[in-house]
Amino acid sequence: MKTKSFKDLIVWQKAYRLTLEIYRITKTFPRHETYGLTQQMRKAAISLPSNIAEGYGKKHKAEYQQFLSIAYASLLELETQYLLSLDLNYINKNEIIENLIKEVGSMLYRMIYPIPIR
Image (cartoon, rainbow, N blue to C red; front, side, top):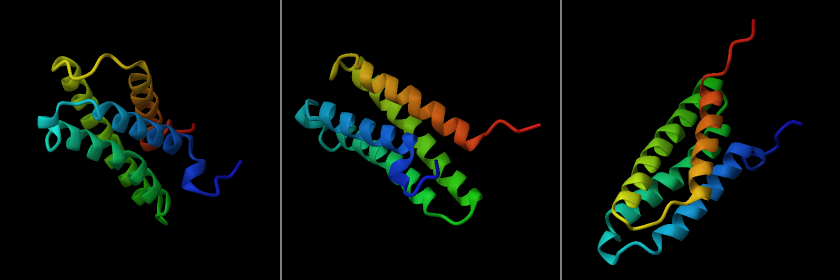
């Protein structure tokens, strides 16, 4: 099935859901983190579906892969911030977020570095 929109991409859908989950958990962060970790996590999370969507709109595959690489880097940043939030006891382990991080990361990696066909 051919995609008609970036919204048809499973990786975008999962990244979007991850962003919503990050917004939900950061609502509970301490007030003194409003302009610190809360803002950083939300910014990294928003970068994921945004860069996937923007890359989808590019005309050349190399440009698309560049935006997917940016999204992947943002995912790694977000994962680091999630781990920090756990260690600071701002949140409890969240299976949904952890699974989405793994799934989106795996999908993005395969899209950036496809297995060559022989």
